[in-house]
Length: 118
Length: 107
Image (cartoon, rainbow over all chains, first blue to last red):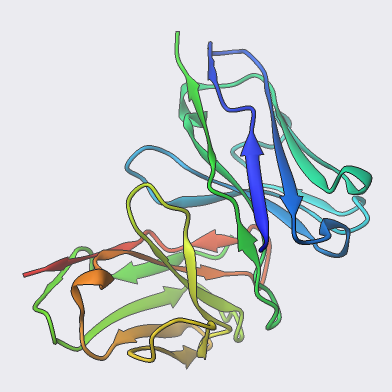
């Protein structure tokens, strides 16, 4: 079975930093592009960041550009999200996902919760 | 950015009803449109990919249609287990964008 397991979610003060990790089992992440998607409490889904298989094509939502960094370690079958200069609005459950694109099904983790509050 | 507008929300219907959720894109997204179902406390679950392709294991009462900028998700006979929030998502261009969600309730 394919599993994506996010970790690193925590309570952090505004202005602080957190690094999220997503480890995969049952699937080799190196052949897939990867996304982070978040969901604020009671709100809808918001795409956050994308990284291609080689790690050299990266896109960010405007809301996180310059503050968040997506990276991957294919040897660890993992993807990461470094989150700096956190704001209250960054409070959300963060999901890593292999996107469903061009007829190829993807996968989602169960999410990790980040709360930004003083 | 491509805006995805879903309607209605919420949607209240009776068990057995045929229900349709629509999703309008602000520009042509070709066929790069997926539908997800999300229940409280759970990750989104893929229902339909590329407009009309049913994900393996998803009941056949779910179907998708549309093209260009107008898309729809139909549940042919609403079941109690279909109570959830449904999202459309485009991946034609970055940023990837989701519709605002349609919460389906039982009347």
